[in-house]
Length: 408
Image (cartoon, rainbow, N blue to C red):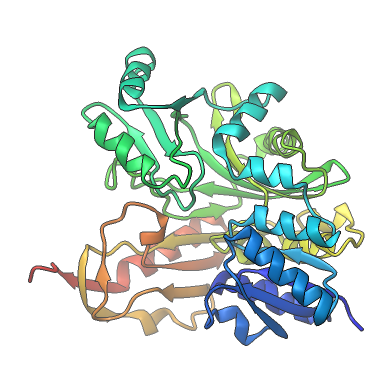
């Protein structure tokens, strides 16, 4: 009997990982609260349980493990549920990051405190207990700053504080996205932002993923901080070693010795600094598509083998190529979609790897306040990052998503 892998989350971004696991000869179990989750169509078995409900998923996994089939490994792919994964691994005696590490990764304030204790370069930060406290911090530190929930995701409640902003509104807005009603503020770091993806194996790290993040719409969507994709190879080739070192140190600082560490980092005049890390494979098609396309590294396959307790060769994580890859998102005007044109023009193009819209004619487009409001994306490939970016921008410019105001 082959090994059994539990993949927590059956969302559309998990599908490449599910396909890969099945190609590896694994019996794949997918858990998700959505009974029509896309990943269920490919799974050998399905578990209905909320990915964010740790106790529910642990109980369901234990029941499956004892009554249906032994689970040999557990992982999430493009889902921000490392605490659920770690808890299942702990309950079933499987390979995984410590529950405490996953807990720290899920709380940005606690994570930053670990960074501070370990001497990891990161922005100045502080908890914020009230509007009055926020006003005191602004008076002392000045603008710009960033306010965010300590325990949310998808850029929900993340705001760039600048002159003229209503601090009471900013505090209330950020607070509403925190399940624990905890908010923090931190220094806004000027400089190029980089997404990294590393793997720690017995404490030693390899970082195959370096993607330049694109924040061209900071003013358009202000005060919301909205990323519009990224591209590789990174322009920061000379700084890769220092970025790798800091990202891997950050993972070890929260107690990870075997696992994936996804970093949000900035190149400052003082060198690389960590905004935060995630103890999981990245979303945004980065781990499943962008990194393999750009580097030839099968990061997801290595993560699966690590979750199963199998040996992972660090050499397998070293880039074999430096291809141009870009991702850009669609941001139509808010309102009701009346027409979508030119989509078929690019579907099937050799340089379009993925092109997907999340909305149809008649759907309502809400104002962009976080990353969940993006309406679609395109991933393009080329010989260089610049060409890939030009192609992606061409698609987002020429695919027209027309809207009319909701009020007519």
